[in-house]
Image (cartoon, rainbow, N blue to C red):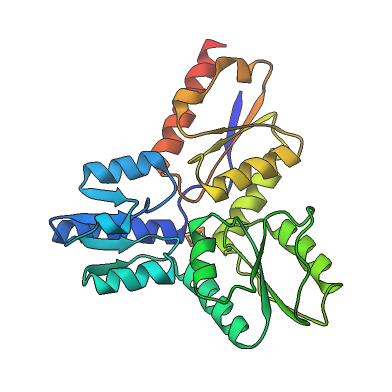
Length: 280
Ligand code: SF4
């Protein structure tokens, strides 16, 4: 059985940077916390907890600690609350997420009604929405009905981890619904590369194993992309979820991993698949 890993998979620039910032901060501070998980990978969050970096969900539970703002960013309201609490704030928001927030603000200021391709309850989209007026519309799936523009000038951006293909579909639909459409592709390069290499690999293997947090938007997207290629696809967080039956009559296994999946998990999954192969 041949095992091939997607050309681009695992930690992206923004996640590596956030983890490095968290580690450095924890070395210099007694208590370090993040508001919500620093990245969407439960195993990595647990690993960091053991190193003294704790995730807290409720801002009211934060008192005198050093707080790290995670890679997805936080809402304007929460940022204001943190400032009022006079905490030591360390901002690990990914620069590409910040860029999307800046575009959202500028386009809204310039009189555009903003459309965002994304998931309404994802922290990155919640943060984006907090910086702009409430005329913004979030579209999760361009194939489903969505509210029509109320202004002639419309701008389209995306959550950084969305699919390019869905983004283009939404742009095509919007163009017929307004007088002017300003499109800014805020999907980050790391996402594009991971999606492309997952698609390419899924076209030539018998099954795809997609590794990453079940709560990770970008990993879930990779699983959707592999599946859409007609490839039998399994989304797992760790090697413990692998099942021997998946590998029956399989010659080629493809492996890919989301931008928040650490190498040690990817390697342990590969080792487990090799062991399964030895028993075949
Ligand atoms: S996926 Fe892209 S936007 Fe998100 S943290 Fe990584 S580099 Fe930044």
